[in-house]
Length: 431
Length: 166
Ligand SMILES: Cc1cc2nc3c(=O)[nH]c(=O)nc-3n(C[C@H](O)[C@H](O)[C@H](O)COP(=O)(O)O)c2cc1C
Ligand code: SF4
Ligand code: FES
Image (cartoon, rainbow over all chains, first blue to last red; front, side, top):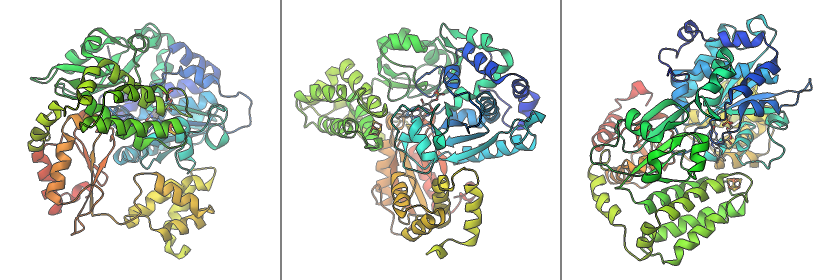
């Protein structure tokens, strides 16, 4: 099927316009805002940032009474390890995002939007600013858009390096000029968000899908995909496959097809060991489990994991699972904002135990301790970062317990020692 | 103290502040501007910025410390930031870091004596499909190999990447 988001030759305004771009905005401005929210509801579009919350429903939570300021915020923080799709949208199709935000603004009655983009994406921030300026020059952004009387100002706001700012309330804190520490919910952003005003916050990929939905209708979008998982999704594949990259496919595509047909299969001599299907915080699948699973919200949940951000991390037999989990633990420990004891202490403990195991200094009891520390972190904190650490820990230990036991028995990691020498000689192609 | 902020900076600041209903929301972009101009954010600059935005110095300091991209001391001319997260790790990031340590004679967080290179290991840079990845200042280098890394270092040493803004 034809791509909705990743298209060629639409990066600049002229070509985007020539291919029908900004027609949906014109159409939307002639509709009743509530109609647009209904259409998005009907499309079954769900948040592509990780949690999969129904987008139309989220928009409908914005209070209807007139007179208060409202905001649309785009989450372009793209920090979940394994994820690199929003960057691709911004590079290839920035106007779909800009148009989606203007439509979202009109639908919820917001006259201001911000794109919060991670600080490292400086080239992409410039790209967005250029695209917004072009859209403003043509009257698609700014005052009295296309003569409709609707005003919408849009700004790019660059982050400064902090994974936690991808969490929506931390993002709002950061956008207001504070440390990125998540807020307690409720109140939810739809009621009290940016500058204490009702705010819709959506991922880049979610907002970029909106123009097509307005143009072709919610029913059309809902008919793509599988069951309640509607539409296309960007899958970012990393790891030792022949062609890693971003692929747009209908939800419900088999993981096996993504890896074999889109990515050309495993690199020569590599054998699949495991797949993390939705970004580093989603539970790992064994090669066996990965073989038949379909990539949609329901199928991955049934398989004990999550669609998450669509970041498919492929792991081959040469990798040590204890070593990889240690890499993740170091990351989450580093990124914990420290507000909640279970998260701050739990991430610390997990990293410490994994270091011990990796160095051959662990004991058999460490494995159960690891698991129970993780279990104790679930659903006990202000934001789900603690769960994002706990889920990989629990799934790695459950599914690859043998490797943890070998480490605990004092054996240094045979895989790692064998590979360390190799990777020094040839970093790019070693592993 | 406010004299450490130039008139030019203040004009730019006014422009950035205007994007937000509250001026102090511009704190992070303004810290980034200061770093762009001076290479790092000095205590005096934090103090001056606090006065300009009429917020407590403690908040400016806390924000500067919280975000990893802000530097509170001068760094080398080229800041090498090697991603150490999962996809890059699998693609050989530990080997890249090791060879950078050996070639430059510094560890993560250190700067070479000639002031040319600072080395850091950083978390996922959002480019995992082209792992391993390294940033030099604001520029991405992707699909790195030992050979490519050497070439980049040589190019930097001889100032051959000016076109990229380096
Ligand atoms: C620790 C953490 C990090 C997150 N990082 C991101 C991110 O980088 N990008 C993103 O869009 N959502 C991220 N999210 C999800 C957001 O909190 C939020 O659910 C999302 O932006 C909502 O948009 P959506 O409904 O369109 O997905 C993160 C959540 C958590 C808990
Ligand atoms: S769970 Fe962790 S990251 Fe989230 S608010 Fe609590 S301490 Fe901060
Ligand atoms: S893991 Fe290195 S860029 Fe994502």
